[in-house]
Length: 249
Ligand code: 6PG
Image 1: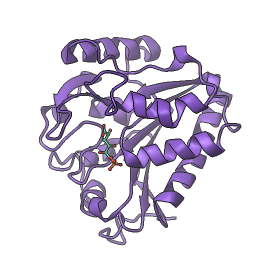
Image 2: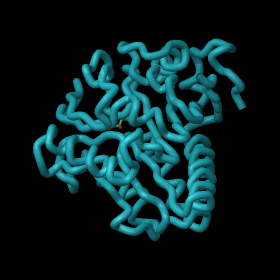
Image 3: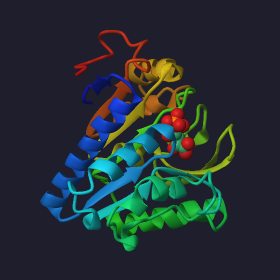
């Protein structure tokens, strides 16, 4: 299992700019290699800042009409609801880029959660075949409690290693959620975990300092089979040991 690559930058603005650049490099390389690219988007303020930077500064760096967009998790709310991760990504990113609408694959929240999970898994299996989804890039935020996507501490979903998508619940509103499972997330060719602010310092420490701890779901990302990069600002990295910092750039 490769050690995590830890990138520590000054602040949230610097992180958004650096990650936006790296996202464009990964997607551009993927399109050059196999004619298209696939990215998993996350919800939350930290990913939102990255999306705004991509929309503002990376429009010319990627053949966006060759990129497929998926979601790592979704709140089970209507697509036009202010709390929707799909709506947030459209507002901050997709509406500003020349993407092809048929390449945008939101989680279906118009049906019951369990049915939505099954439908989304069918969508992914149709695109990736039957092994595991090998997304070119998976973006993930981290909650102060150590959750990532909608995998929350102690969730049964953390023990799901056969299915790719499951319905689950969150301790915070909106409670009903859809989420990719650990294996679906960790078979990505690159996985970026994004965290800024002092409130995330403990979650980052446990996420980098342990593996597959149900009390800290982001620690399951240590099982990533491809490249795992933690993008942190100084405040979120404040509780890391020198060893955990790895090859901090
Ligand atoms: C969601 C996200 C969630 C988010 C983290 C970090 O649906 O809310 O997928 O996992 O990425 O909670 O969010 P912040 O960056 O806003 O702290």
